[in-house]
Length: 445
Image 1 (tube, rainbow, N blue to C red):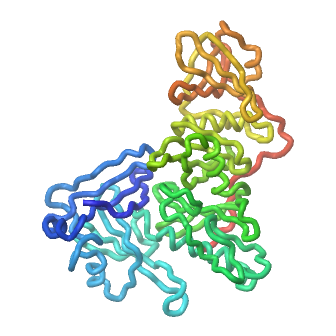
Image 2 (cartoon, rainbow, N blue to C red):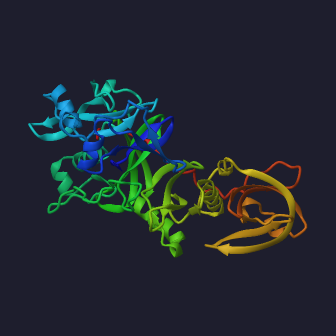
Image 3 (cartoon, rainbow, N blue to C red):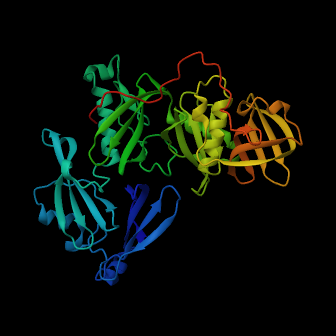
C-alpha cells in the first residue's frame, strides 16, 4: 500500500501531517477491499517522528478516494447530497485519532461558475461512512482543513490586485499587493502564479506555509508591493477552518531573500532552504526555516532577521540555531533590542575554570572561543555577552549560561561564581524599537 498527499493538522496541540494508506493497484484493491484500509500515517512536525497508526481489527477504513464503486468517497457523498458541489477532500483525524474525510462544499458567488468559494463541509467517517454536513460556523473545532491553501492563496491575490479597482490594478497600481510567489499584474500578463508553493515542506520556492496556533492551522504568506517585489510590506494569516483572515504590517526582506541568506551561511554544504515561517524572537520579526540536503532530509535550522536579513543564526538543532541567532542579534550594533529579550529558554549553567581562550573576528563581530578544565566542549561567546571577555585569561573561574549543539556550547551570559547573571550589554538606543508585527485591517480573502 502507498500514501495519499499529507494533510497539515494540529493534533493534541502539536503540528502533524497525516495521510491515509491507499491500494497500490487494482489487484491489491480486489484482495483487500473486503477488510478495508488498516490505518494511516502521522508525522510529528516538531520531532519528525513518523508513525504508522493501525486501526483496531474490524474497524478498518472502507471509504476513501482509493476505493471503487459505492465506497468511492465522492460517489458515496453524491448519493447522500445530490445537490451539493464538492471541493477537494482532505484526510484528517479527530482528537481521539479516529479517521475522517473532510469534503468542502462549493458555492459560486459570481454568476454560475465565477467566484469559487466554500460554504460548508461534509465530514465523512472513514470507517462507517456516516456523513454529516456542517456550515462553516458549525464545523467541529478539531477539524483543521476545510479550505485548501491554493484556493485562499488565489483569493488573496485577487483581493490585493483589485482592492482599489480594476483599472488601478493595471495602470498606476497604487496600493496593489501580491502574495509572495505571485507575479505582479500587468496589461499583458495574468497575476496568477504558476509556482505557488504546493508543498512547503519540500519546495524551495516562496509562496505559502502553515502555522499551528491555538489548535487551528493557518496558512501564512507574505505580501509585497506590485511595484517592488524585493521587499515585504506585511504578511497574512488565514484560518483554514473558518477562513478568518488577518493582515499584519511588517516591513523587511521577502521569504526568498531570507532563504538565499540562510543558504549562504552553509553554502559549502549545498543545502536547500524550505519556505520560512514568521516568528517573534526577542521582539524581532524573524524567519524560521530548515535546511535540507539533496535527499530531502533536514540537516540544519536557521533563524533570519526580517528587517536585517544579514543577521542569521544556524545550527543542527532548533535550540542551537536560536542561540546563535540571539548571539548575532546582540552583536549587531545596528539592531536595537531589549537586553532582557536576549535570554534563551532551556539554557543550562556551568561553573568552571578557563583552560584556554582565543578571540576571532567573524563578519565584523568579535567572538571568544574558550575551553573549561576537565571538559572537551568548546564555548563560544560574542563580545557583547560580557565586555569583560577581552580581559579574561586562562585560570580564571567563571559561571556561564549556554545552549549546546554537539561539542559546541553557545554562551548567552557570563558571571563571576556565586553572582547573578547580568543582562547582555546594551547597544546605543538611538531610535525606538521597531514594532515587528502590528495588527491592521482584516481583509476578506
